[in-house]
Image (cartoon, rainbow, N blue to C red):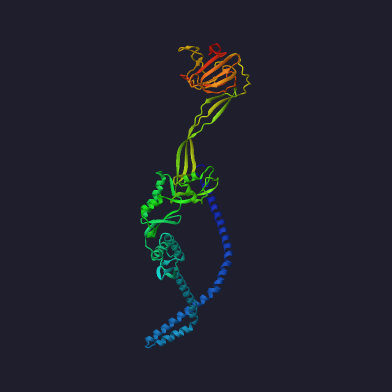
Length: 561
């Protein structure tokens, strides 16, 4: 668009805008006229019906009443003017004249008076009815309760007395030493009362106890599962005793959830003096134990003597409880009566416990097809791990009754124990040597003592040892048959002899463990023992001898390290 606009462009724009206003106005007027016609078509019958009803019910009567009222007030005004004119002219009027004038007016306007009466009387009656309803509807009623001719109070209904009687029975039935007559036949009288004039069941209970003739006093009663255990004079002392029981059970754990297992309630009111105890006596009662008879199911292996000992009973007392049926010949599943101590108030504590426990290691077997089936070797020693466990534990009177795991976190993982085992089947052995020998300790080749004279005697073999020798494997130098396995406190200690045939045998001494049995056929290189330091030994080593026809010879003539 170019600026400034020319006169022709401005005129064209103005023309278009006026056309827009024109067509908009025309269409709006057409829509409004159409709405008006339709509304008139709809409301005309309704208005005619309402007008007809009005004329039939009220219209004519109201116009008639209006004419009568106009006529009435006009006549009254004319009579008043006439009386004033006559009074000015000196005409005296007696009361009878006034009554006569009023009677004549009433006679002329009798219909108006009847219409007024017909309207006024129902209106007055409706007002009177509404006033009566409002007056009596705002009034509270109650029942005056009397017992033995004596007024006790005003209650909302008979149920208040019944609840008060039950409360009185609960307070007095067990606590009084003398028999108390609780049968009551009260009388009720309906009466008006204010909103604050009704007697509650607890207050009524106190009044009934007071009238019962018992020696009573103000106290706080302790109810357990609805049964009154006793009362103390100070409600603060009773609350302190109960809270102390809960605190002791929690053991200083602020996060523990502590509660009584049974329903425990304290009620403040009037109680018989016989049921009121000191705070110290109430504390001893709640922290002590009471004996009660319970049933025990006999388990396999139980004896009457063991059961009696478990429950702190003599055998005679156990038999007395069970009609002399608790002999030593018991069968599993039988039930016996026993006497057990229990607390009057069981306390339940639920708290979280954190502890560490071992994670047992697993044993993993690694198969080696190059070794015989009787070959085993520990590749990695297993090591137990450690995990931190958080459990939610529930105790009742200090005895665990439930446990739920919350979380488990591994602190130190367990290390698997890896064991190598051979899978190759060992061939059947003939028990005869091959004629050539191998070194008897494959993992150690160090000789600490040779075949020689030593300390004045002949050392008839080789001592093979090295660092960490204890437990190393000793193998058979050649195939053969185990002649014997022996143990001596001195000398060779644990040792064995293998016969290789052709008069040749080998002996292995000071072992910590022998792996073969006498008469067993062994193969060259088969594990037969573990290095030790048994017998006459100054340290862990293997004493190895080669014998020909029973006489020791130098082993180095047969083996090489």
